[in-house]
Length: 299
Image 1 (cartoon, rainbow, N blue to C red):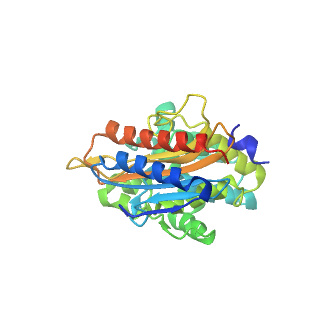
Image 2 (image 1 turned 90 degrees about the vertical axis):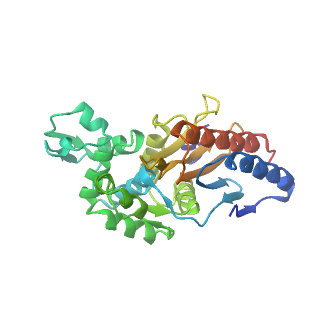
């Protein structure tokens, strides 16, 4: 059952039901055994959404979000749609100048000459499902800048997050990516609010979940070791490296379990000297450990 169909330091904190507190400790130790091999800083938030049980690692570090910040951007855009300020079918112009950018963009790959009009819904799908950087900046331009998104996120109670720099700005200056930061529990709160439909109306919330579930980008991470049929609504974020140090390898999302429950999982890795495939495999291992634990719990 998908989410859409269901809803119509090392510090560690753990809140759990007495019925399986011992097992939660086993999960904690399993995750720690994986993270102990990380050549960097790793932050994790695990949240069983039906029961509210949580577990976090390194929860107070400021993690650079990279493309995971496209999720709060999407929420801000859809909030404007909810208000009637924007419309999903309104057109966004992609100019010839826009497609000259040197950045990750399936839009540029598909329309290398530019001079096209895409619907807001299409740009949103490119931005979330394919992590399109041009699409992201087109949305920032449409809504009035990063500060508008930042203000919106703070207004709905997400305090431990700052959205400051566009994709273009991050591409030009290495340190700009560190200005877009959050704590793991801030992203967890966003996932929880999406799951419980607290921010958008039913139709727009379902659309956002559908786009997140259709994401095929970076399948080696949260999805990597899960059963193929597992429904995962997720968003990744990745940086380049400088002096063999990667600023970010991230993934966050909601995993639908065989028992019908759902787990929000946020994993940020920063300042790592490991190759990207190693970081991605660590995320996959953590995700599988979380999946196996909660799938076996008899609530």
